[in-house]
Image 1 (tube, chains in turn green, purple):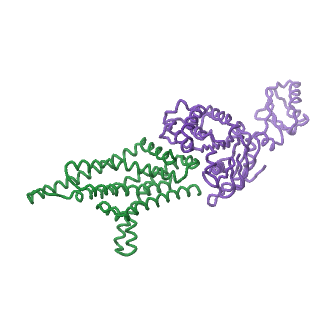
Image 2 (cartoon, rainbow over the protein chains, first blue to last red; image 1 turned 120 degrees about the vertical axis):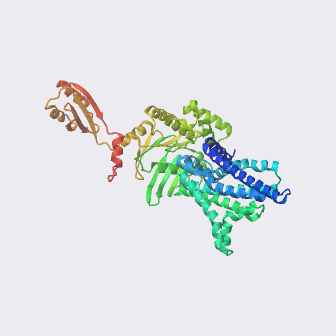
Image 3 (tube, chains in turn yellow, cyan; image 1 turned 60 degrees about the vertical axis):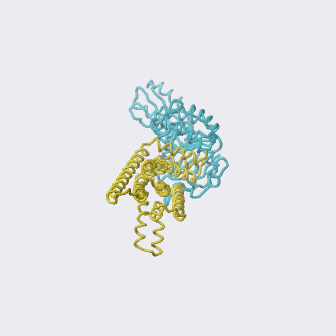
Length: 256
Length: 311
């Protein structure tokens, strides 16, 4: 067992003995379930109406009618719930002074940060995979293209992991979990609003930079079913940057 | 085993430690003594590699703290002021986690856990969640954590605060039993604790080392006179005067009640025999005669009095 494995195992244990994950998971799944029910009901209504109008069997594009709006709203839910998942990562260690144990053990800060990030990413991936029941159930009653759905899930995974890495960094800055949650919420929101801001600058260099920095553009492209290396690079470099920032925050805490 | 040279630590404008140097040979138990905020915890955090010093050198078990922090960390067991416990884990799970991050091999870990759990008296609570344990047990889990990888150097920050008297005695005995094979530094603001378990005391005040010595010698260094307290059954008016005439007595005064007298004598002069003879021949009825040597408490007060650094 490497140190990173040890940290992951401990973090997963801590997540699943606390009620937080269950509460967050239940809320997430309930909201996603409701939203998808609404999307499906909406689609079948339209299908009925089309059938009455044309008197033929209507073929709707379910990817466009159900999955894209669903993935769009799931993104919003993530902005709200993921900070609650990451807030404890370092803030709790600082509050309970267990950080002193970690930092005086023969284990590197990079291993601690990686272990924590991977553990929360695994919790999130687990939650996300439970929502896979929705397309699975739907596929029994309707036909749609699986490829954009897979890409949508890839987008959700990357998007969520980017938010988690931001939360990881925020948690390394304070010993107060509430502050950590609000801080990551603010940072994610800021990153989102950059996209809105970029449209004000149009096609200028600044506008392009802002638009690249915001996740909106990258996420939209992925859930539309377009796989672009540029977008993958965005997410991975974003996570790497936040990982590095969290590492720096911990070093600063020791050197203060 | 532990060698600290010219260590200074500043937090922004505040100087927490100012040019501290000391060294501790293998197998000794040393107490850091000082009021709150004196720099005890800061010193310990520097020794454990939790934070680096602003300047100066620290060497532990032959390894430099800044150059080979990895090796230093393997050789140190550290119990911070607040035991670093994950409240949601059971004692067993917690110790396994600690053993793994201390890089113990699985068989070695099993072996050490058996020994440590017995040594710290945790056998009965192994399966219980730490959050449900009492303060005393939590402290023991903290100590077990520091001892788990069998480090030659132990650094214990106020290991007995918040415990009841029985628990304090247990923890002290445990620490005493570790002496010899382990080099131990513990911090305390209890003077009785320093005298009870330590061979050497380092008094820290406002980031400076005020004194390093054995508890006995520290007491002797500051003692200029010996004080005797005498209680008799019948006192009469001229007893006070007569007592003052005993050779060697510097000063006599009335104690807290009319029947007690406080005698101050020159250092090293024992007048107890003359004193008892006198009281017996006068039929005053000797009830009590006690010798009050200056204890560490007074040394501590004198040394850490603001504006008057002695030593």
